[in-house]
Length: 267
DNA sequence: ATTTTCTCCTGCATGC
DNA sequence: TGCATGCAGGAGAAAA
Image (cartoon, rainbow, N blue to C red; front, side):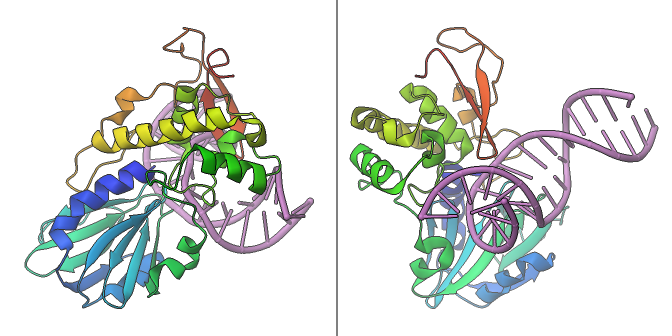
C-alpha cells in the first residue's frame, strides 16, 4: 500500500529515465485507465509528488497517478514481456517503458491542464508532512479549529489536515510518540503535537531512506523491495509482544481501518 | 455539518 | 480439492 514514502521512492527511481523525454506511445490495456492517453506525444518536463499522487508534468498540464492499494510503476525495457495486471505502458521511444501495474485496480490516472494544483484531487490536500509549514503548532491549531470529534489517528489520516500519511505510518508514528490512537484530537496537548509532528517527519524520512515499506508486493521502479518493514514496531503485529514493554499489542478499528497499539506505552 | 457506510477490485488466508 | 466467506485498504460518493 504505497503511502508517501513509497511514492517518493518511485518518483526518485523513475525521474532520471523519463524527464526531458517524449512519450511516443501509450498502451492502455484496462479501460479504467484510459486517461493515460492524454500524455501522448508530450515531453515530460518534471516528475513531482503531492501527497501520494505522482505528477508527470508537461508544458500543458500533468498526468496524475494514484497507486491506490497495489499499484506499481516500473521502468522496463522496450521488449519486456507483458504480465498480468500490466494496465498501462508509457513508451519512451528507443529508451524504456514506464509500466503501470495494479492488481487491485484501486489506482487512478487523471489528466489535468494547468494550473495543476487546481485539480479536485489536489486542491484540498493539506500540507506536505516533510515541509516546514507542517509542524506541531499547525496540527494543534487544525485539531482545535477544524475537528469536532475526530480521534488523533483519524486526524493523521485526514488528507485535508496533512497529506500522504496512510495507515502504516499513522500507526507507527502514534506508537513512537506514545499517544493512544483513540484519543480525541482536540484533547492532545501542544507538546504532544510537537512530538507527533517530529516523529512523523522522522518516520517518513527514515522510510524513504530505506526504500519504503514492502509488506507483500511493493517494489520500487527498479523492482527492488523496501526495507522499512524491519523497523515497524506495531503495524501488523497485533497480539505480538510490544518491543518495549512485552505486553501483547492491542488492535482496534477506526473509520474502517485497523490500528495496532500498545495499551501500556501509548496513553 | 459530520460521521458512517458503500464502492471500487484482486489475492490470499481461513473454514467447512 | 474446492467452494464460500472475510479481510486488506485510499479516498470519493452516497447515505444516514
